[in-house]
Length: 532
Image 1 (cartoon, one colour):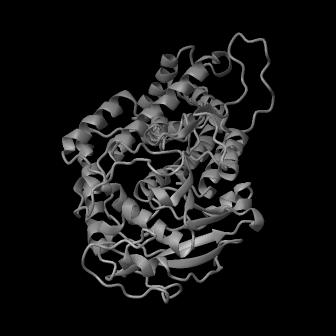
Image 2 (cartoon, helix red, strand yellow):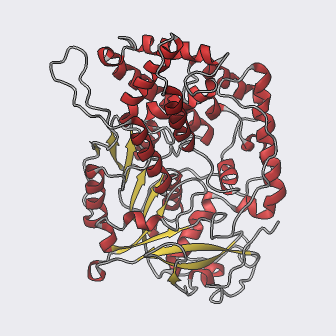
Image 3 (spheres, one colour):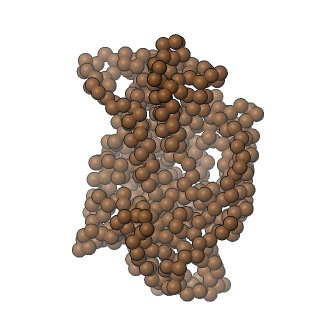
């Protein structure tokens, strides 16, 4: 398998650099041995498949400790400021992942005021997309990994994780240990230099918040304004944050159950959250022996429930589907139920979080230390299987390939700090399950940033999703430099149907949107947002 792509565009401006010794710093803070990388000339051309953007290639060392050795390429894109007279610099953007392609991300900012005053620059991080890719050999194991595994099935998760790591080791070569957040941050600084900018501004989503915090830690004097949307906790391991995601899944379920219980006259599922849960447990028990209403087994139910309790806009439709599933069990089923639920389940499966690159995800997540004792994973998996399996929480606690990391880290993770760059913003939704809300709070506290909270909303990636409050607040900061309050709230776009609680005198509005239509809209938005 070919590991590296050695492109031509943009390479001519980089001379082969000498090796050896501790790098001497030039007056601008750039080590002398890296000077040629920072001074390379970029060759811009229209992006092949991205309308409105121009693309170029930046060359960087594979190993920054040996800049005279192997080199790799980083693909970048640009949407230039539409008001050149008012231009205030570059806004570098990242969609998360790890492993998300960022070349198309500048188009997300095209209709925003920031697009007038910033050149918005996207990039495929090292290992990803049009940059020199990192690949893994695909695992051929097909062992059952249900959402509620038996004791005999728990080792299936371990065997699969080990096989994934083995495939990554075979295909990744030396490059794999250099696909790291530290090195991507270093690549960002080379991009800054190649663009001729003294400072960059930064906007990162999801894992991109960790990357932005890393850049600010390593290059604090080169960062100006920054926004971290749907943030990670810089003080926890990746595995610890997976546990936070499981708690966020349960939070959404509990919120849905309370909302539905307050509307028993509408949905007839019970007047307490416990009664709502009992109804789902009854469906789960039936699925252990036979399909029910378009759901083939209990894993389907757990997938179904995780998606439709996360997004408030589909709460009402999901409650109605649960009612019809129970009616089906009791002999009063809707003949269209199976067809409808099959469509809803397929939409839920399309929404599942998955790695966005064949090798970068499995390399970058291994920067953190993971438990090596499988009994630790099995303990947590049993606990969540028995207490709250809805939303496939068990998969968040299972061992990953990083439990069997096949390479030695070249550098430790640094302690994230903010020293010489300005106060920024963190934006986070209360019901986000990809990066749990407490993680955003921790990021804001660690960096002493201002926090914009979006209560009762399950969206991941708030800016650019249609929320006027978030967009206007972030735009005012990025364009005019005006910070909001240190802690503030914005209404999101993910709202439950306007159905009155039991006993209210207000009548429910007529003609609520169809749940399949709503779910289709959510999934399409997820698939086209560019956020990972």
